[in-house]
Image (cartoon, rainbow, N blue to C red; front, side):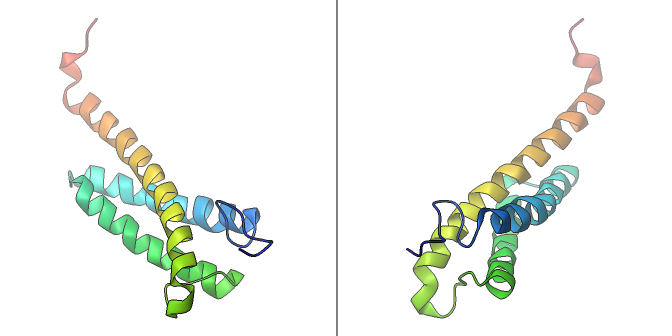
Length: 115
């Protein structure tokens, strides 16, 4: 492991926060929101987050000298940080989905409120 690598980030913490949390987080929140609005399942959301994860790995690679899944000599490192990115993105997408789904249910079934 290189001296600049951390447990959660590959190049720097600022690169991780900017690319994964801010850019990827906004896109994954939109993914969670759209799957909730379309009444789609969790599997479709997981697949969309997977595709977003590949795109973010490419941004890490092309702009910030991170690793990508190809060539195969850097596959292990890219897979490790890709899994971390996927967990963060999936959590943000799940939060967006839960927020929108709760609002949908409250609007649709408002008559069931206690009180």
